[in-house]
Image (cartoon, rainbow, N blue to C red; front, side):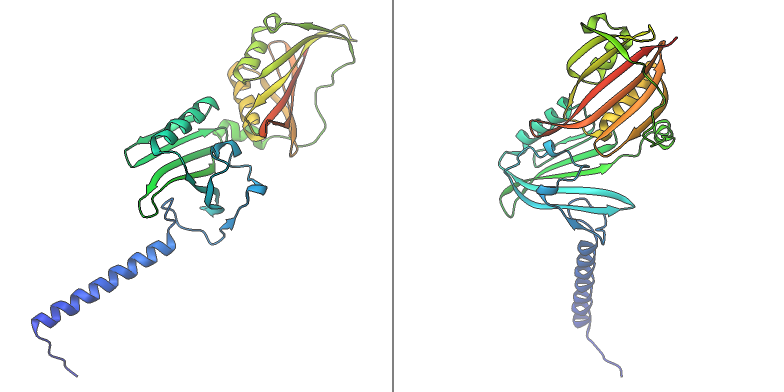
Length: 296
């Protein structure tokens, strides 16, 4: 059956068909892509609770813990976990930009990107094995200022990945320290330079230092202290990075959920770094000790 349409009718029919196609495309796009990140929405999005905070996202990055949370979930994109936290902020965009930049600087994050526009602010940074991005914008429809925090794991550098893979997770240590026959409190300035660097570059606070005398007549040192605002994973990466920089040779490490140790040798010493998770004013902190014995 042939239907003859005049040119004007044909024009409107084509116009309506094009509009339907455009609307359908938009609906498909919005259903498939995350409106916050521009990434495909995974099929395994799981809501999160503030009572079961995920380790991937530092809790202290939520700078307004009393703020109204709009979205808090985990999803997997390209086999990589992502944590997304979206909340309503009581602060303006510029104030949030300054606060998050200060947060990154204070907590030793390496800032990778900054966008400081009038209607949109973006900060992205990395530390250890994590990448964090903060998107600050204004929801004109709701009249609210919104902060969206996204956290994803960062692949370790090849050298660090090789070190991690070769770890023997057995609890048996390689270094056998003899019995301690005496301890003497000393100042950090009396330590060899490499051990002074261990305290300073790893951000250890309230460091206590002792000179050790062992039963086999050897000597050594014991350093204890705390590293604030850090996870077990970031502490591990920090110690590994320092040891590579100073030239210490990695021997072995073992890690459980909330405690770990790593053993090295270098500068004429054998060393064991032991550390465990602690709470410091509600934030993650690491209690660390380094025991060193002079090689025979």
